[in-house]
Length: 273
Image (cartoon, rainbow, N blue to C red):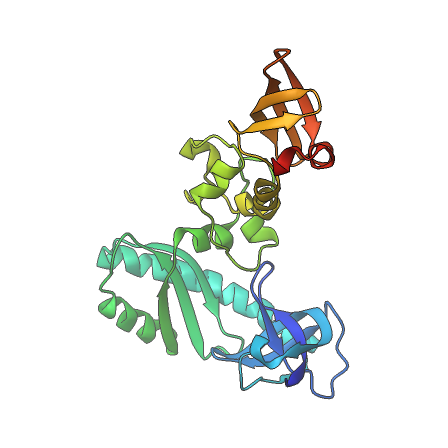
């Protein structure tokens, strides 16, 4: 198997991490670098130090880090952000003029200013051909309008979640992972949409965090309603504490409720009856 030396580069605070070849450059974490991407030349920050990865984990051909960023490059990046803010206002004005049913979320210039990207949300397909022509005549560069989903919108705009903390997606989550209602069921959470949905209106990303632990516990523990033979007699499982691996058993004779750890049940042979 072929191995490649790579560094991990991120272009946004909580953006996806991309691999680049460091070549002969001695790069350290938190260092700014100039790289070539599918969008053009970009500036990013090294977030993963040099390491070896399998060929299947990289997108070939693996692009190299062009060079370490200079102070002039950092200044260009700051100027691009200022230009993007101005472009946002211009684009919003054009949206109003064309009466387009779209919500502009963010505007980005590529580092080399060869392209301006406009991110927006909309309920359906939008015919923005005339809008693009208008924008191209104003900015005199390549224009790309990119429709995004509500989760991406939340990631870009940020905010405070129901837990009182900054949104996970905008602070540290690089990628969105699939989240299902089954995860909420397995964790015995309320299925009230208002309680398990984030600001984006989709299921909260944090439902995924403990899901693997619950899945493992579910395999190890008996089902509610299952009959067990314990040292104190036979009984029925009436409750489970997945995280602590505790089982509540209602004994038949004498009739009372007792609690066992998973280890205690295994030692008694209660789970092999």
